[in-house]
Image (cartoon, rainbow, N blue to C red; front, side, top):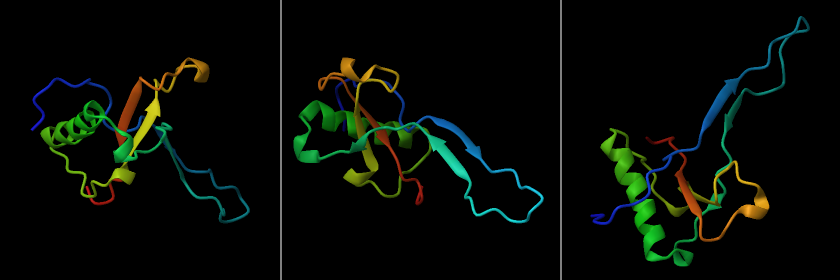
Length: 108
């Protein structure tokens, strides 16, 4: 169990929309629909995380379960990490300001 308080941020990437290309008069389109999500960084490497970071990743999963969802495929590749907020200027991002998100809900 997680006994210490952890930051309360987003659990999953921000959803910006689902877009389907409008069909023209020339028949079918070769383009696929687009699911536009926040870029949340890269998959974590558990051996590079400190205790607090691992606790925060566990807290994401527990918060998701608390709200009635299961992830179904809880692997390190399905936890993304980025430095700082997505709106921060890249030079202002600090290695000490890590943000985590859960992805891959195919089995949720």
